[in-house]
Length: 300
Length: 268
Image (tube, rainbow over all chains, first blue to last red):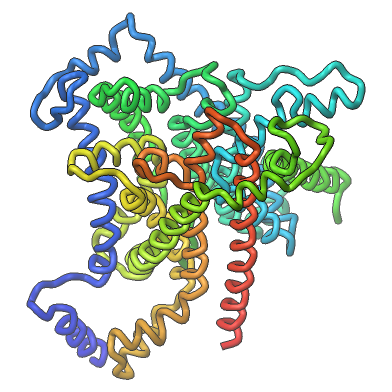
């Protein structure tokens, strides 16, 4: 009875003007308005520009598929940028999964009281602009830089020419996006109950079997988030190719930037951006719809 | 009970982690070294060290403006994002409501989005609205990305929060405002503090959003980039190192305060 009365008083409380607004909806208000005006509206603007007359600024006033015709014209080589970006993103995801898995495992199982400190060491670079960190690699790999100079001082003929190559770009992406794979992966591995592994071992499962049948599937939500994040960031990467790649590869984000800035062809840039957004958000929504965020972030 | 294979795996994982950490900090060290070199061009091994580029950087008026812009943006972003994300996190993790699952996913979208493209899209949108890009539009751009991050950080704290405490206070006749101030806020302080730290540091170091949305106003990362592309001077690594060191100091100081908050909460 007491419960019923309490509920009644609550409903009276929350509807002073007779309109029912749940506390959750009300609390989400500011964020939803911000994302509506700062995320959804800009994307709609991009979509509007993508269908505007090429090289014009009359979005919302014209409708044409000319920009897409230009992009899909076989004579246009913009598809190579898409191919490079997607290839880089895929390579980044695969390599980072391999690089980060042992570290994530160590953070959860091995490092004990050091785990917090090691995590902070991996988080901190996120707060240093990627261009500063990538430029550090330029200083490392450049002629007379740290690698070249050190090898010369040791009597070798000098360092290999690694800078301004497609490989350097991939290296830069692995470097910059490592934390985005590592932390979701650690969350995922933390979701695997220790008892389950012990139980599997007691039942006679080998180490590889336990990993494949118990640990990996249960850690998968976290790993998937990491893969999705690094894919998205890799597909939209621009700083790596500009700083470490020296124009040896043009990524799609760079093509979009050029269309928006030097070329002043906003409709073309928007059409390119729209294709990228469709790929990226299609993937993001597919993966996210399969995940239960309450479980991953630790609701009991 | 440990087999030799297990011991070997453990050792390998430790070595691998140490090696990756070394790589993570190697370029930052290279930058620090380059900023302390005498002479205009970086040559390794460094023959003469000097603090002249640090002095030049510290006394440059242009750089003072950059620091001012970066600080201004970061402070406003921190205040606004903590306020938005506090309520956002309650909606994310605390309240049961109809749109919650959808809301949880929508909030992740700006994080799962390439930042350069977001910056360019915002530039288009500001232009369509007739707003001239400046440091103020950069604040909006930072918020779009940072508010979701801070919401997640605070939400993790909210998950560990027992809702019966609020209900008990309500049963005892406490007003909504009183409950917020005396029950909810003190419990969530550690999460709010981490969120604020994240907001400040992510805004301080952000490059892709500032590049496209700050207009003629420059921030530290934006200026560094323009000089990396054309017109290198050792002030670039010097300023980069200073910016990194201030972030580290803030993280350290903020982390200590956060630990104290957690400890006091554990004692209370």
